[in-house]
Amino acid sequence: MRNEIDGRVAWITIRPLIGLFPIFLFLGIFFIGPLVFNLSQSLHIGTEAPAFTQYIRILSDEFYLSVIRNTLLLAAVVTVTCALLGYPFAYAIARARGSLKSWLIFIMLAPLLVNVVIRSFGWMVLLSGNGVVNWVLEGLGLPPIALMYTWTGIAIATVHVFLPFMVLAIASGLETLDPRLEEAALVLGASRFSAFRLVTFPLSLEGLQTGSILVFTLTVGAFVTVMILGSSSTMVLPLLIYQQLTVVSDWPFAAALGVVLVLLITFILWLQARLSRANWRR
Amino acid sequence: MSRFRNVIPSIGLGVAFIFGSGSLAMADSKPDKLVVAAYGGVWEQSVRETYAACFTEKTGIPVEIMTGESSNWLNQIRANPENPPIDVLPLGEIDALRAMHAGLLSKMTAAEVPNLSDIPAQFYEPWDGFAVGDSYGGLGIMYNAEKIKEPPTTWRELIDGIAAGEFGKVAWPSGTYTWGPALLWFVAQQYDDNIDTAFEKMKAIKPYVQKFWTTPVEALNLFATKEVDLVPYWDGRSFAFINEGNDWVKFYIPDPGAVGSLTPFAKVKGAPQVAWEFINCTLSPDAQLRMSEILRYPGSNPTVQYPEDLQNEFTPVDRIAVPPYKEILDKIPEWVERWNKTMR
Image (cartoon, rainbow over all chains, first blue to last red; front, side, top):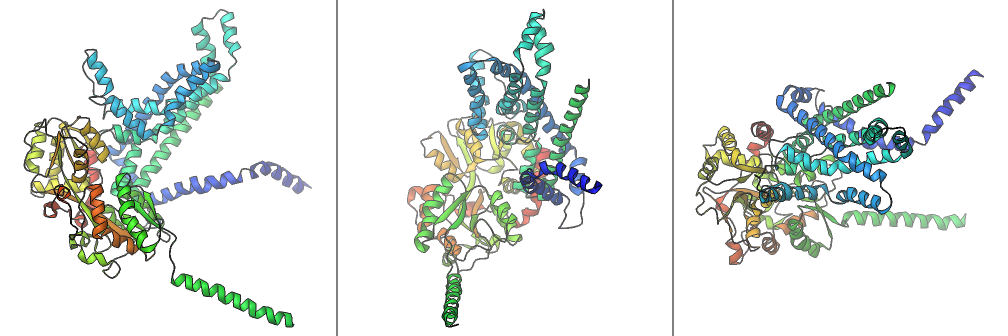
């Protein structure tokens, strides 16, 4: 009798997961599988005795540590910039009505219709020494500035690429908020800024968090913009992986760099989840 | 029982027919298509209009062209050696060596590729007969003739002049470009075959290099927008740009010559035998002439007769320096890492 009850409880627990079997199979083959292959390549499994030589090479060399540092720093700068620029635009979308809302969404999404390679070449035209930006500066009597082949130029173009993801995530969160909460704060004597600071902004943090995670992970994995707008002084982890695969053909080292990239992203996401839980408890 | 006596011979005839026709099919198997890799843009156009057309005319088999890059194709056939997704490919020189060492290519003979007997050995010996170059290009100097009146006559003078700031900003191929290691080797040859000196010279020119480019498109953009007035660039691409009406541009090969680049075509192991006919087409005089008219690069078959205007654009083969790829192959990882660390 007890076994029968236990069996029923187990079946009730497992039954909802059966429907997820196809997605688990898909993830197992196309996500876990390549990661396992990558890991085995990086450890030389199958060709020689397993060894951590590639990881020792990465973690003991100041150049590779600086590449990791630059990758994370670029992602952080792009994420913060997208949040600062994206929040006002997302607020405007969330509060707009009718055709204005549609136009704002279209303006935000329009860049996504253009391939990122084309957009990067477009930024070359804008940011180059003879480009539009310097042409305007010279017209205003100001000295030209060097934006191409610098981290600044790369960050500007990368923000442009990933801003829509931040805006849409925040706007989705803001649209679920009841505007009467903000109205109630105003009626009770709060200023517009106080109502935003104490009511709207805290409630929109989840959307901001989602957008930040999205932009951060996308930036950490981006390399086309860095390759086109960067120089020999601006190396990031994905570009280094690409170089090791295409020019050097060093699969084990490229695999190790890939594993390091995945671990970094996983660690950042875990850290972010811990901080979020700590905030909720407060 | 009499009903079954009639059925059994019928079944036997049917089985014999199925296996017999299958055997005939295997003995005379013809693929429904041939998959050939080609670089994008005008390269794809040239392959489609020349070699693919030649092959289809001779065999009746259509050609499916897969565009991409050498490293991608190498990784694809390396990942699937039992059932390669590509039958014929034009790998880069280094990647052709890697594919050869990995046992991914088939060795050709004059019996399978009759046109091979016309081709000079320098176009297939670097790969021990596992690949053959259909054409070659030379890396020379494309410059703004309105700004630079008298360019230096030698590579050494050019490099030292760039380091001294005599030419303003230039664009130079990155050591991590596909032909970057080959150019590093070539620069070393200008300084007593000393690779350390080559890296020192690259460091010395860095303040005057607008961009160490990794794709020819970048280089052309920088030059065409006059961000730079001088760029090492391929002869065929340079003349294609000049012939678009850019009279302010000139191209030349400093002494002692140009870094050469060949396009070694190879048949992938496991590809159908009929793929040799495609390789044969890449070496045929008619197809190479048409290819040269499109790409402005000379073919490897010396029997091709070119019109004078086209001939004048070609770098003579005796001015082409082909790097010893077998010697530098194992040094590439070290040189690329050194480039990354030295040039940041």
